[in-house]
Length: 212
Image (cartoon, rainbow, N blue to C red; front, side, top):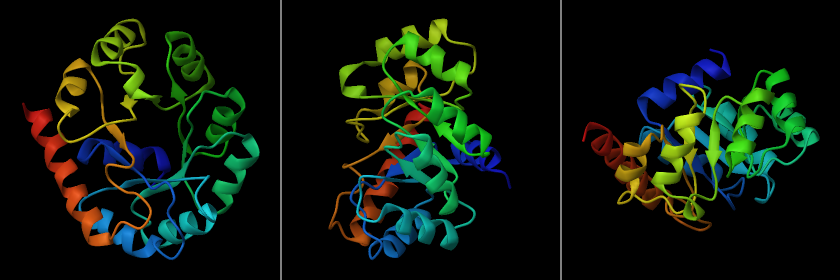
């Protein structure tokens, strides 16, 4: 299955991206199993984690059905390194056209970070598959709704930053398609059992909010 097909399938099933900042290669197998067991299929390891390419390679090999890749990707060279490690997802805190174009050229899914309509239109023009609204704490559901009113119909928007099971509903009501989950889901040293418990809580919350 192509990366974009995996992305679409997982976003329909459970539209949550696990952001594993600080993950070590030693932790990766257990944390990956915990997330997959809770229904997650979208996993990113930020490149400012210890030996991130090793963790990405492990997760991608162990869970080929999942879409695994990197966050905090800032250069086209890093895109190529992630691709060589088996990653299929590129997430950035910012919009850089060279990063988006390289990811698209390699057949990877790309979610650049944006905070303004200007950045959003630029990212879509470069070929981004969706947009990461970051940091979500600096925006609001009202800001998201206003952006979506002017962006092309069907633009996929994913708020990231400060998302908890308790605050998802207003974002979804404003048009968010899913979320990136950071320290509320995983932080260095957190046990796999605790990650699985919190992952299940997030999964139940987004499904409940979607139904509501």
